[in-house]
Amino acid sequence: MNILIFGPNGSGKGTQGAVVQKKYGVPHIETGVIFRQNISKKTPLGEKAKAYIDRGELVPDDITVPMILNRLKEADCKKGWLLDGFPRNLAQAEALWKALEKEKMKLDYAIEIDLDRETAKKRIMGRRLCKMDNNHPNNIYIEAIKPREHGGKTVCRVCGCEDMSMRADDQDSAAIDKRHNIYYDTKIGTLAAVNYFKERTKVISINGRAGVKEVSEELLKKLA
Image (cartoon, rainbow, N blue to C red; front, top):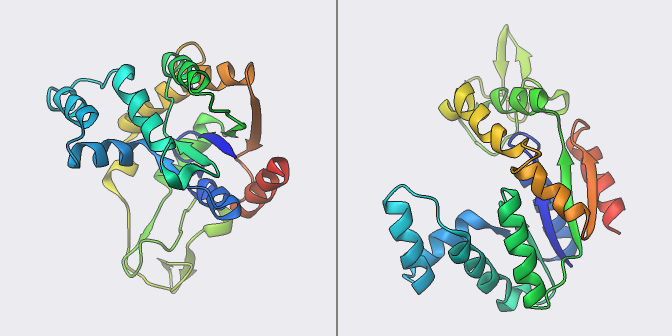
């Protein structure tokens, strides 16, 4: 099963991607990892990409798309793949679709985790990190994983650690808005890409406002 997954920062896209990966036994492929691997291995495409990155420029699609296709052709993708982080805009969606068709590689589903912009931003800014284990999920705006109150202090809901912190970039309102400006753009941004795929393959839209468990259950039900 070959799948694309979309969702704004704060939607829980990574969490739901892991659920799909576990259920279907397909690799969860993130474009950032593809870039880092190609650059570290000094592949021809990686060297070209690095030149653009070193100049502070965006890597062109005619480098990015072949890099992604090479990854999708690797042995662990024979049973399928879950691609995360690409395409980010309409032009990339068009380029990827054309490349997949040329390779006769079918796209079975695109998953869209639908979440309004205000809620997505609040969720990002509501993340709290446990000093004992950063993998303990805590978020002051998500009831299911809200930190506990103990002795007048906010403590980790998992282990009770009192030493909670926030990531600096999670509190950077301007940076969050910049990323969301790209995602929520229905003309040329990521949502334009989602709409492009709606005309060409099956797109599963999931209400991201529900709890993590409920979102997972709905997603797996619609994928079945």
